[in-house]
Image (tube, rainbow, N blue to C red):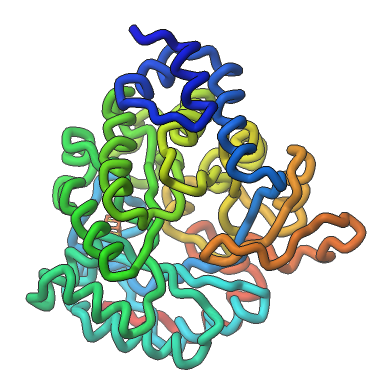
Length: 396
Ligand code: SF4
């Protein structure tokens, strides 16, 4: 057993810790000492005390998927009567609504439709890019690249080049789930391996397409497997520097084939956030997930190493389909950050500060910018849904 105090002191000062040390901290370090060390790293990186948020919209282009992940409540198999494809006009309308509400980013996310090859994605990205050049397209992930490569008979690098040239700015960290082989096989047996997911990301970074990295905790993985996930990501980051942020979130257990499995507890989540901040000496940002762990715990992550609370999420259907019911509006996000002792700032996809809320008297008013303005996942579709939903989904 390493000397935990010495490891914490080294990590708090910006020194590198090994995977074995990270595991020891994760399992045995006193919670407050762990949080304090992670917060020291965060303060050193961001001495201005700013913590950020983003306004973006997740747009789902189809729920049809051949990969059938056991944790997923969103997908429908090909030929399932509830399968649909969202027409391009509907996607563009959702982009327009997002721009009207101040969104700076779109995250296109969908199933692995068996008929969607590279041309479908090129046409969609090019259409959005032409109509809304101000929107960053932070979309898809390693799994989509693998799927497109298979459908179109292309190499990974060719898929990435063509997506980039059609308008993709960066990859979302989606599809990482857990990269460690045993638990990944258990929850997503048809998905590419973690090693392949990382190979795609490394290729993308080499082609100038950066990304984030995520971690879905709580599907039955061991503590050692959690740390191995972090270690696999850091190995790639050491070579590429292309992961902008690490975003852990918790598995939601409803309406899927894994239901009944335990979610990660609040303390496990906080400990993971803190260990991630200490372990990822080469990743700039750590994001807390209010969507899956709730606003209060999300706020607490700001004292355990996180410097970002992610997006307001004008629309989100995938995780919400599996039971994530937390909702937030822009004013609440600003309040959560400020009452945690930080200065809130709206950021863009590149983490540049767009609007620093350093004067409460100047805060945006009204709550029109809120999560799930439009959501098909829980029947809570709001006013925005009225225009977009007039454009009917195409059944498949
Ligand atoms: S998580 Fe993605 S790849 Fe897996 S079944 Fe759901 S939509 Fe398909």
